[in-house]
Image (cartoon, rainbow over the protein chains, first blue to last red):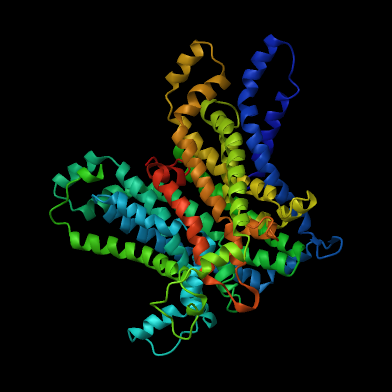
Length: 314
Length: 281
């Protein structure tokens, strides 16, 4: 989706294969050239149906007012409105703030845990225990945190018991505390994702280099910082990109825990699009927001992801 | 292997176990607490003072089977997920074969296009997909869920399988080729058996993502006909009496246990799968 021009050319190349159905001898030669395209074509066509088609649809819809009746062309009105919509900019900002804090915390924690775990004789056991949060359905995790902090007031009660506060905490009226809950839930569930990858990266490194450094008297900490970490850079980059993609599309926790509140302070861009489209049935406007997000995605995909994935691998 | 590594003299083992043990506690405590929520009566969940030592009750267990069509939600989830994994494998195996075994113009671009669909935020395509399925008359069916889960996971599955295929030595194929075997026969008789672990890993990861999927399911499923476990949870709000947490907790564990067992079984391949083959763990 993020790369429509490329996909179109891919399909165009695959196309000439279809009409080719001449005699056996010719066929075998042409078939040979066409075969790789024929093999990859079904997947590409399927993905285009489910990504390129919606992309084009969203672009067209974004120039219309689409509520309940027929589409009414409005030109750039939706985009003009978006540019001055503080809720839209707020949603972009919230996504960025919640996402980056969450990502940084997860990365640091996962690196620290991987550093301590990978040489441990019970590394397999740690890995299984740490995996547990990741394997719960995100909607269930959202309810755990909703009950713990909001509905059940367990967190406030625990703090009261150890004497840190003397009263209830009004999480729902504080933007930063609400964001904190979203961040905590994300860190709890997804730090294992990075941990698993980092441990594999550390275990996969060349042990001889490590051993040599150790015999030279270097501490484990120094080895990690000066040898392991630089070697792990490509792995860290790939893992963080994958995590960043998921964090920027954060929806489930917002939908269940905060509903975007208080005062839109935790509304992410995904929730903004959902609310505009499916709560207020302002589909044209929601599509305009989708298109802007799509453009951001394509730019990031081309600048960052392509480099991290394709060039480092081939 | 990790177990063979000797520990350095100056290393502080106490600190290591404090940190690892602390994180283990942080991982497990909420889970155990939530299990206790599932096994207590509803009257002891949301109370003026949180109750830490509740009475034991299987109310929620009876409730999820008698008051809700939980069996149907489960069937919906399983059908949609298995269907989507089959679609993914049918599309991804030939695609991965093409991307890993042939050299041709545009290969890198096609590969990147497939990868890049993973970056798509569900919210971006949510509105058009909703209309697409409405026009096709597929709203509120598990067929729509199947198609959408397959689309979400296709990039992952293709890249994981591609990574495993790249590891197969070319000689294996060349030998078969000199015996006169065609490309498709090589794929079927040599490549697929050799990368079976990769195919299983990819399927398991696709399964997890499909179980977790929330936004599309929320939009597509509007009646119990197509509710899956994930979205059914958010509908356990029981109307006027608020969220029914003990039922939610039990359903969460019901979904968790099989996933956990399967993932433990493929542990070794997990890191490679999660990075679409970029890390060979």
